[in-house]
Figure 1 (cartoon, rainbow, N blue to C red):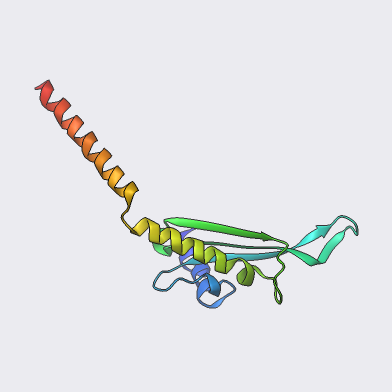
Figure 2: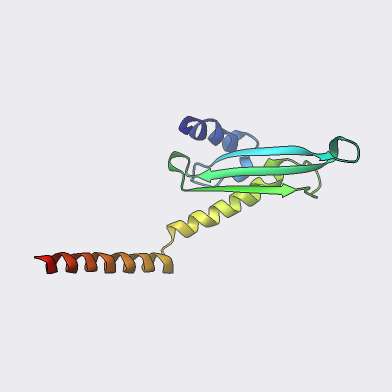
Length: 130
């Protein structure tokens, strides 16, 4: 599975259908999809109704996040493909989430305070047993 992510799925972003999922200085992996919807009235696949998707994640060598964006019946003009419709949104979400993971914030301080309190409690408990 690692080979699939670090090889072909990274190449899909570098030079394939998911180029719009790229994030500068980060190895992003992705897979795009475009599917015709079934038309219940005609009993065939629709020629003008689609579902487009992009699943992407990063960093490729040690993925921390995976994002899936699915767009049901996109209305944009031009080509209706997962790479054009869903990849930009998936990339934006992934970039913001990665930035949030890298940036220290209130949750980091809370975690550190909780960890320090836990460590102090454990050390106090150990010293009282002696």
